[in-house]
Amino acid sequence: MNSNRRTLLKGTLAASAVSVAASAGLLAPRAVLAAGWPAPAFSAKGVDASLTELYGSGNAVDAKDIKIKAPDIAENGAVVPVTVSSTIANAESISIFVAKNPSPLTSTYALGSGTEAYIGTRIKMGKTSDVVAVVKAGGKLYSAKKEVKVTIGGCGG
Image (cartoon, rainbow, N blue to C red; front, top):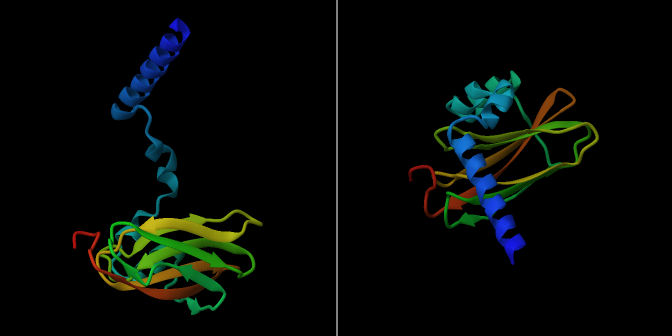
């Protein structure tokens, strides 16, 4: 019985120490990831402007090799599940945009060499809009889109 109490006490003290360090800013993952953060792309207004900030070009070719799986109707725009997959060879990255959001870029993912071009995430949508997936492969941009109707907005709507 005493060993269980000691294990519980050690775990509680460790969790408390980590919580205090994190709240004090001593454990700041943003400091590690800040170098790769494309802030101008996330703050750009409009999909084309965001694409230009992120990739240097706003020109993306429509591609049937990109599949977007998202609900036709999202009852809550705060948590819309989206998966994107692509069979385009040598995919380097996948980015997801919501055309009518105040900041259209929701996320961008760098893919390792030889990995499957597949991501799954949850995004916020303020209102009914096109979800646009952009795949960068071989230095070119490819895109696909799907309209998602939102009944309760998640971006202040």
